Length: 130
Image (cartoon, rainbow, N blue to C red; front, side, top):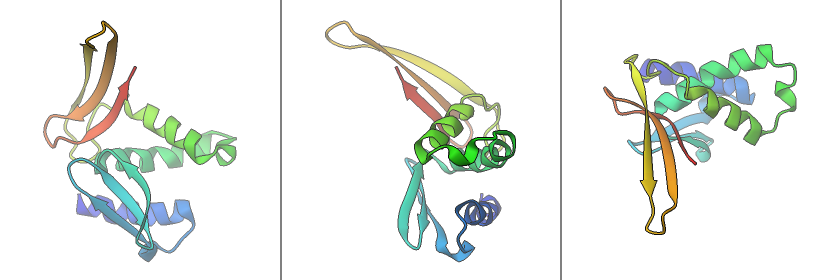
């Protein structure tokens, strides 16, 4: 994934209007973060989720007339919501699958968790509970 990170550093710097050297990456199997001048700017569930968002951001910027008017939270929600439709992992290219788990609490309440995860590399690209 190193070439993807280099590409994403340049794209992120362009999106954020900062120098590429200011953009950094931190991560492990449970979280992936982008840093700006050493400070965490944003976090994703995986590097694959970041790759998907960076790829989609350019298309949304071109196609949505009001993209610049959306605040950070609105952009994040829109980008994250698009990840549920991914068919292949942005990090390794393997087919990914959506899994729904329904859990019932001790008081009879049920909650459904939806996750989209790569079976090959383990990258989580989407997660939501309702």
